[in-house]
Image (cartoon, rainbow, N blue to C red; front, side, top):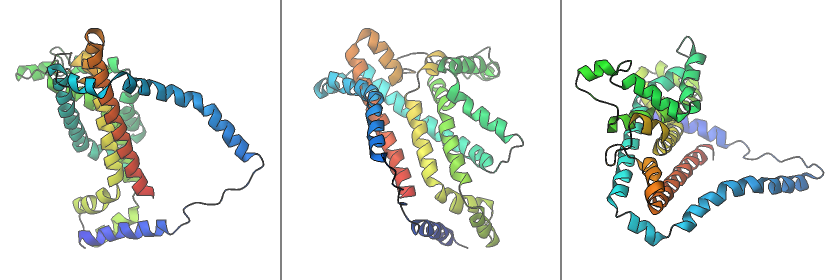
Length: 290
């Protein structure tokens, strides 16, 4: 059975889903509209608290000033290093995290609940703790850092340390999203492909991946966005060396003490990139469930 036939299964599934009513009528309750207006009114303080600081960043920085600050070598180095390291961290996370997510979706581990908790740990750990943990693991006197040092490889306070710190704190976003995507696939479709002669790799490539593509893309984008904003683990494990380990969040920290305009410029860039990442994720999910 060819890949085209397996993709037709996905189209059939979507067509059946689309045939259902898009929105069920809501029952009418007395005072429902007044209650909604009250909730909207009570929501305004929190929305204002989230929106006003972001607005203040853009009001404080003019486009002319932003372009002028982009000419500074420190700013260009921070932006370039952040883009290179975050894309590298996201790619490595996708390569190494996909098998783990697939195993978790199929409960391949004996203690899958414990594994799931372990995956979530970087999300709740303080970033400083993550940095210390990485340092005592990969440092010269660390758990495995001594063995690596004998091979002439130094990880702490290098660009590689930046990538490792970003992977550690951001990988759970991709793994969790991919696990949910893999788990949502109907097992009958995979079994049907297997009965038609497809091996395990073909089933994964032509059935599993296309049907879970939206989850994989969303997880990758969220991983990239989280890695882009990583600060605490990076500054402890990789240091703050301009052109080598100084990413945009670290440059903002230095700029806040030395040049506020640099900090504002990089902050606006990070806010804009994060906003675009969220828009992309929401667009992917909208296409999936529309």
